[in-house]
Image (cartoon, rainbow, N blue to C red; front, side):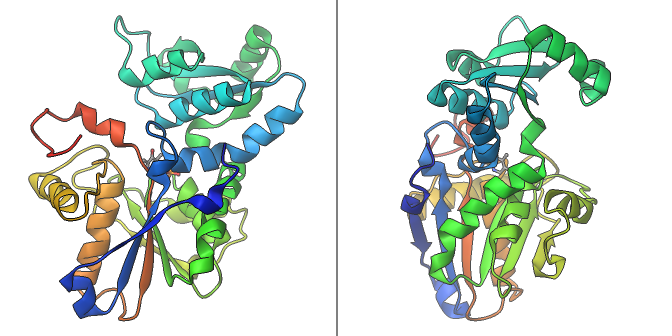
Length: 303
Ligand SMILES: *Cc1c(COP(=O)(O)O)cnc(C)c1O
């Protein structure tokens, strides 16, 4: 499924701003790996899937909300590999399934809906025990792949991109697992830029220590926390016009939850001379475009 990660497309963006500031910006098109899935999610799943394939139970169990890109990616990957997938979904079962959960169903994921309060206890031993008695043995993947094994998978992204001598690797931060992978896979001269898409995310360094098991140099890491545009999945007219401009100029479609905020941050940093001349910045387009379907239909000039 990710057999040929060396074939990831890279696209350079050209404009007067970048020329004047003497920087290069390249987009790593993880969004092109699959039309529906977020490319980074498959990488985070990589070593979990590997482990599951070697098991006798051949079953993955994981967690997510009704709009979880992670759940869809897990469902898809399991279907591709002939593994069974079980999704523990936050909240009571709605009358009408979200588009995301519908897609999970299409990929044969077995879903169990639990109340929000039960969901908060989902890591407790009691709850895991009850899942084991209900479903039998499985490989468990934490929500969002937030685990050192997920970060190790994401480090493959950096390895596949790194022949190209970038000075900076950049991505959006949700759980921070992908950015931890970039840090693990980067060379010591590189800087890793993470753009938080959540408001008040203050524990990124703790997350890094957990995800990389302390095997990373946090001095290589630059966290940008002022580009969340109001918080997770929030947006402003400024962000929407930026997305439309990117599309007009480069035919580059971005999602408003992650990649658009990350690229806005990179452009803004360059405008403000906060990235040195000579920088060669590789930005991960992580996909997630189906999330744009939640916007009113005339918001974007693409969809
Ligand atoms: C999940 C996701 C991210 C964030 O990745 P984390 O590893 O959780 O930080 C970024 N972009 C897209 C499109 C995603 O679906």
